[in-house]
Length: 341
Image (tube, rainbow, N blue to C red; front, side, top):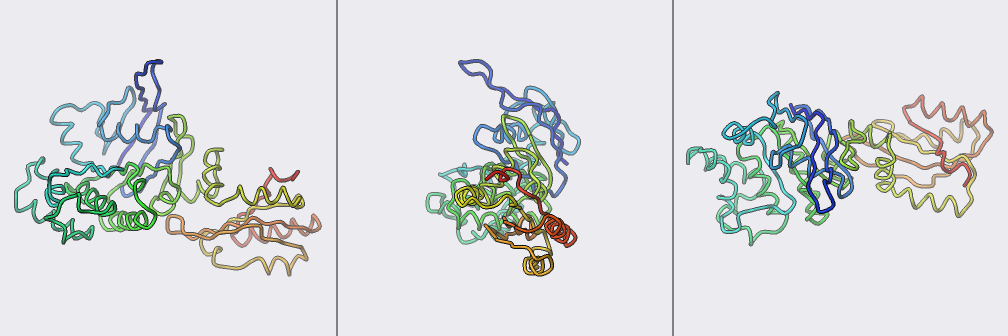
């Protein structure tokens, strides 16, 4: 559906060229909700602007259904852009136009007939829960309502790809949850493909099927969300994961209490997250087990539990306990950093 190959982009600065994207390659399949996460300056927004052809890449390919957007000009480029919608962080609404006209704007640009425009706009306002706001103006709306207008506008021309650039960053937590639920509902109902630019792990976990971790203008890790969160391969991904599970807190507690050397992280995925193995392990193998921290949550629709455990016992019994966990679908590993705590 979308294939990005060896994409690079730089900006001129008084101190010389600033390389914002470095040889970025990624493939997004139809119907994916693909998230790009990273700290400020990682290159996420530059990537979104290049994919939407709001900015021209210096090198590389952006293939949308096999058509290279970097080589298009004029009418061909305008036609390709109509296959994409954008949801912006700060809404980018026409403040002097009604909500109806804001949603209708891309359809008027595309030359749609008046009756078709009206039917499509009213349909979308119902989808986003704003049917009663058609004749009001953006200034009368809350932030969440404005973003719902932005989502309706992005979907107006029935795009194949919708790019959400920090779409929830300006919203409070409750409104963020409602917007993520709306986007998830729309994705399931329409099969539209989403590119989600964010620095928020909750957005990735709640909305996305796949994720790419960006740093210094590069993609340093990518894959299914559940795989990257439970098996991070890079230090940046681990930091996001650790921050999300408050591991800094228990790490400090372990050091202060001088807990013994056998500290484990256990990850329960899917059905294993719904079962209790702790009592069985203690009873079967005569070991001492303490839970230092834990959480259970939904990641891309799959339940994932995470426990930090201190386990004491004879080495053969510890090995048997670890084998029992793994045989029952629990991923468990000793945390090397704490061996000398």
